Length: 78
Image (cartoon, rainbow, N blue to C red; front, side, top):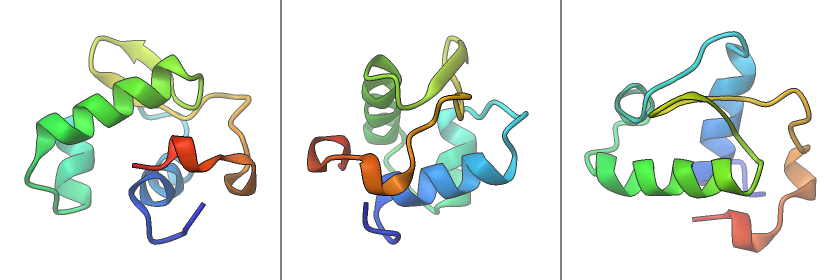
């Protein structure tokens, strides 16, 4: 995983606050992303793949069994 990639940035933020569940809007604001819909789709995809935890509709967190960055494949990248 490239540390400057979207997935790298999201995982880095989620690891800083593992007890907090984030909305796509919160993550978009943190990364100065204007296309929240695109980010929402990517977050949902990662959640379906088990890379992110989903605590409620539209709320994402880092799962307890979160893979280390070097274990992610290019398919997990945006």
